Image (cartoon, rainbow, N blue to C red; front, side):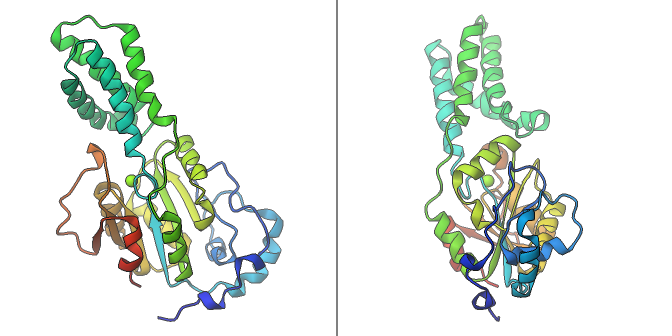
Length: 299
Ligand SMILES: [Mg+2]
């Protein structure tokens, strides 16, 4: 397939405009790279603020925006950066507090993990869900064992759980090199992440990866319809689009349903996202690490 990358001017030739007019919200944000302008030609009311100062100059550069060879949509948590370890560390702190009270910590953890999955229906992916689940597990263990619930202990458990949000998650190895490699091959890239808008926005900014994406979108949930919208906004055919993520449930299945191909990164996931009945999924490739995808993604 013909590559168009060589026809593009180098990025240093482009007008200097801010890549994103944050803060990131649930709308689609288009970055300023001229090859990203194709999607602006269509009305799409959820597009974010435009980088106004250079619109005319950038329109003149539309001639340099050939249809890209392919597009790749990335999940964020535990695909580009490692979030789950932060939850594990916070859970361990809460578990120690429970154990110090003479309670069965293993039983508490089992209860907490079960409640946390159940609470998705009620609390979604808000930052309140995990701490709430930790405290509720403490309350349930107290009730079932006849122990008096201590408000101070419950508060300590909650604060220990909230420590999951104190640190920014570390990037997975080779993430920037992987994204740059795909861009150099002519790909347009999108980041599609679900969760608390403020928290996800903070992770995106701290990652330092925003400049590598043509589109960034934070959503409450990923659906085939949303994924199709992102593909359309990238300006690629759905048959030339890939989804990369660590969750069969939230990344692979909706992408396959939308008509994309998918790479499943076999990384750490929490109970809610665990769904390993993937052997029969057509158009899906499994990878051990993110850096493997450059060899796996074909156009
Ligand atoms: Mg994920």
